[in-house]
Image 1 (cartoon, rainbow, N blue to C red):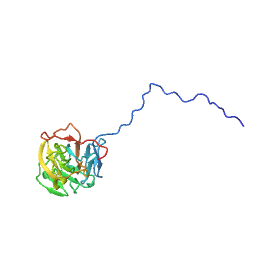
Image 2 (cartoon, one colour):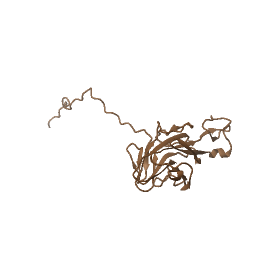
Image 3 (tube, rainbow, N blue to C red):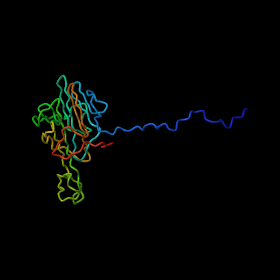
Image 4 (tube, one colour):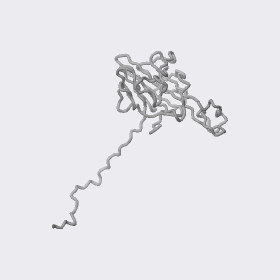
Amino acid sequence: MKRAEEWAGPSKRPRVADDKPDPEPQVENKTVRFEEKGALLTLSEDGLTLSGSKGYCMARANCGVKYGTYYYELMLQPAESEYHVRFGYGTKKADINAPAGFDEYSYAYRDLNGACVHKSTRRDAYGAPFGPGDVVGALISLPKPCENSCGATVGAPEDMPPGSDECRSDAASAHLAGTIRFFVNGKDQGVAFDDVPCGDMHAYYPVLSIYHAGTVVATLASPFAAPPTEYAFEAIPYAQEV
């Protein structure tokens, strides 16, 4: 039997130039954007431009909030034919194939008649109607919890420190609700909803619905075109999980 060679000699692979740069690492797209959507909506690559086609369905952003005050904006684009918009906030349980405001899990402002909608119940003349060319915004305020003197977690306005005498310790304080208000071209339309359930079990995401062939561009991070001036708020923060 022929003896196998013990040494095969130098490698025949070509040398890699020492000055060749390493490939760029892949960076996760850590931006707040619309991500989930119903079948009748088209979403741009950056997740900020949404277009409708036929009936209502909904898009939901990838990041939500549980406590604090947050704001985002939409710009309604010109169109050759009439279209309609609803927008606001909703939880993960909101039906993505129905319009915003359809069920108990989403709260919406409607372009027609300036109505607000929740659980498919419309309250007309809440605010001003809006349409193409307008900048509309949604601000949600969710109270933070604090500790009362007995150590029980209750709700309190966010400027009250834990242990503050102002913290409410009665049973009702355990069921504090958040508020949602809307803006048209920077003008406050007032509180649309003042009974939004809040707490660790509730996370709210920007939601948007378009009826027929219209296009809406979202601004989910500053700078905003027409932000509220009378309220302290933040943009929706990026988070892996809420």
